[in-house]
Length: 463
Length: 105
Image (cartoon, rainbow over all chains, first blue to last red; front, side, top):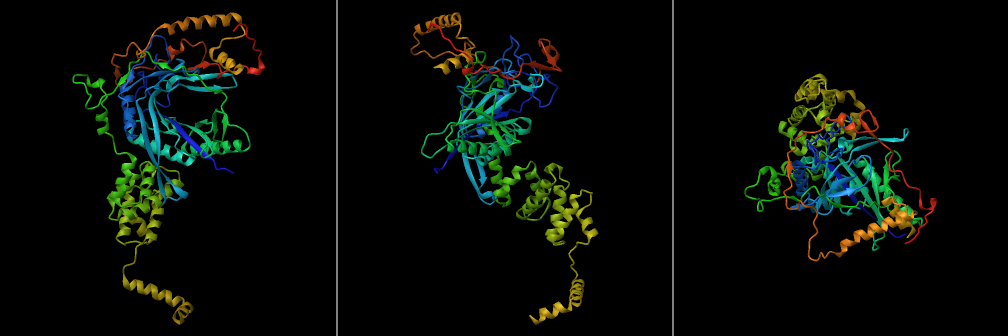
């Protein structure tokens, strides 16, 4: 049987973190009374016009720079037409011809063999990043044969990140999206919380034999978490392989991922190819961005987006933060990944290190093994930890000074989890966990043990 | 070809069985073809009459919204502050379920 090469490309929509929408001044907020965050433009009432939000432009430039893209100093807006109840204008304003950023890359890491100790770095090319409008939300009421429409989300700014099909499996797709999520959250350009629809991922999947042209691809939608992304991609790869091996063909269709059944099913509404009738957006002139060189002398600051100015103010990206952690604290690269992966864990670690004389290389063990596994077991976030970095630091100091053993320290930690407000010292006194320093006392204990086990002593003496 | 026609019918929502409709469509195409008479060699296509203007950038302040009542005034049907729309895309009957008879060409 000839081997199959799966090809996976991703289209990611990240909601821009801004106060108001992309082309109108209504508010961006997740849960709000239906249609309360809708302006006349969002509802597509005649006579309204789009007015571009500067913050959205800056967010897109930041993201483009962080992903090593070339920023187009001149980009254009277009209309993409299709009919749907949650798209009142009948078209979406997007950037199809000349988007704001192109030709970037995203590096991410994978553990091979499921072991944290072996990490490889892969890169996926970013084709482009474009600014576009989000649509409203449809609630389908099949019993009454109607759709309820809430336009609160209509017009919210999105950055569409288009990745080239450089990935080959669910694990790679998930790792790439996770890294993108961390980057967006670090930049603040998007909060990228998938559960709130701030980060939406569609996967394009196809398979082919090595040396042959790419196979027909399907688009998989309705993926609601990074875990499901990996599952959906892997399922679709398997499904396509099975179909082809059984002599059938793959349809160029859109499929939805059913998380309950763990499979993809054809989507009813998307039949065949759509004709989007792309046309330039006549109400918007080209978007011009400047850099230090091209900056016009006497232009209103508020009207200028300076790429270099934004570049200078980019925060440390996750990859840089990890490298700094490894260098500063002497921890392993895989440790730095875990620290950044859990919200707040890096700060907790650094605060604990400040509190204690114990070497960071030893502290990390307590953070990753003890603290993190406890939090995971009880489904708590770092912020919700009953043990603060101060408490842990104190405990580790006692261990470092050899006032208690490691085993005793673990016992104290188990008590501290209860969050009863006792200090490590109090618990140690309570449970008599102090290391006995008095030689005489130690001698007495040893003698007592020897006296109590005469037979064993004879065995040992005889060899 | 039959599939192409079916596809065009769906996109344009024009019924090709109706001779008058087809003629009207032919007229429309003939009218639009006049554009080919213009010589556009060496001329960049214009997207917008605004191409020389500056795109105005707005500050990220919330100054609109909160007018659900007003917006819903235009809605024929509403359910608790939601607009009501018919369900999804109602698919046209498939190719083999309908007779397609073309007159003229």
